[in-house]
Length: 279
Image 1 (cartoon, rainbow, N blue to C red):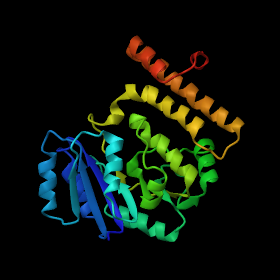
Image 2 (cartoon, one colour):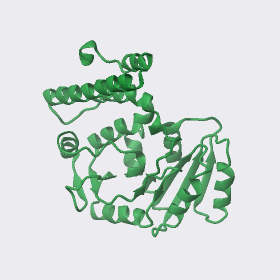
Image 3 (cartoon, one colour):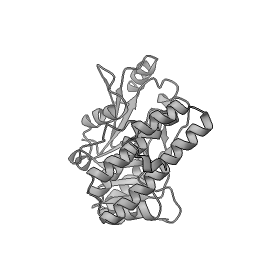
Image 4 (cartoon, rainbow, N blue to C red):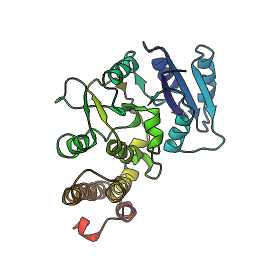
């Protein structure tokens, strides 16, 4: 059985996927499987994956009968995993050759950790593990680190499924909601090594600014009404109010900058803001 399952979801990624695959198969850590799940690509993605499979027997390939969408497909990929640990490498990103070995080294050093995150700030120089309350307080009151994409996280597979995998109702903001959910339920290991090579291009979901305008608020509403944060009610209300203000301000700036008044109003309504939030 592979120790690590690397999960790669794909949709029309012919320009990037071979480089992504090679960054995994050329890893210094060898005891892995690479699971690729195509979500209905119309370009040459599938042909390129099949070509790569001829070179490395650790690659397993699946095709969805219907297009699932980003996060349902991520969960679908995870359902095929056999490893003790799972990590995502998006089909337009890459990882450093020693990335997986590094993560496994510190999972061994911190066996009580349930998942790791790439820590993007400079106040931690060596890996550190935090329990739920400490992690949540650090994220909200010191420096945020749970607002990163799936490519910056490694899970124990059992923990991932025990806590219902990734949420699917918040579009590109599903990772933001889910990482809060996971942090509430387990121990978080912060890794200061930025091993993910994140590629920015026009085809990314993150470039769709409009959807984030309201989805960022919907996930905040859901998080503070459904998740059991280790905080007082006063603290939760204050944090939610801060995020709501910021999200409302982003909509206002978007509207004033683009002159898309109808879009701004739509985002305000879809985000279920209250009138006092706008004021």
